[in-house]
Amino acid sequence: MCEHDDVMWVCCRYYDGTEHIDEMEKLCIKRALDLFKLSPDEWGVNVRPYSGSPANFAVYTGMTIAML
Image 1 (cartoon, one colour):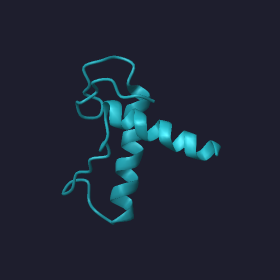
Image 2 (image 1 turned 60 degrees about the vertical axis):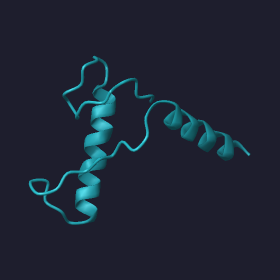
Image 3 (image 1 turned 180 degrees about the vertical axis):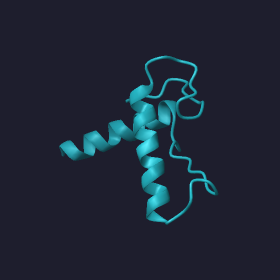
């Protein structure tokens, strides 16, 4: 899944068709909060460190290495 200018918060994006990305981000946020036993009322989690070309390169590299 490639993020195309989906820079808004989960469920508040400008473009349509990002519901799958939203679901993945919500799951990652929940798991990160659960892992460190943090309250979502007190803590926030950023689960999108990559975007655009660097993200595509990371996925491509991972897939290429896995094929070796």
